[in-house]
Image (tube, rainbow, N blue to C red; front, side):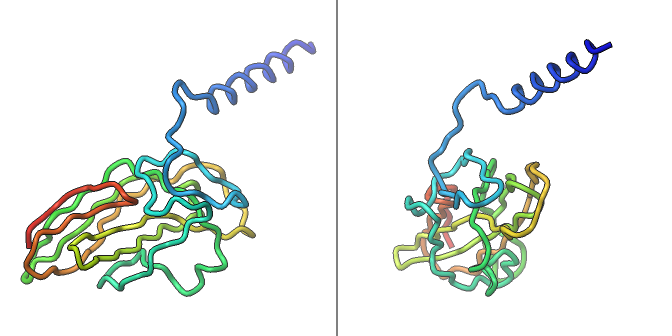
Length: 175
């Protein structure tokens, strides 16, 4: 019965081809991943704040309570894409009122760590750069890992502000 292994092999090949094929080409504008990473998805729904290969993050401006801010050991890790499916801003509760960022999306693997850099300039524009990092020496399963996070942006002085995530405007607010 040599037919059975051949049929199983063909079905597995068809299944793998169906998993990798796409009806439409993915958007490739956005964060450029370091191609030495074991997993680098090409679809990014929000373009990058930088258009150069090898992602150069904005200079971090400490945001109180941002658990996804860059960390000292990040330089030894490999930068990778993040697929952002939803990004929005909203006012938190309390006094003074703090602005919040809600992000939903996927990391390339469960081993990737989310990073969020927040920078507000003199023109009242808050630019947020979202990317992920992974340890190139660590083996990891090749499956996307969803995330749904809320990040405090801080308390803003009076004025009109625009918030962008990876170069895409996600909202405006008055403080």
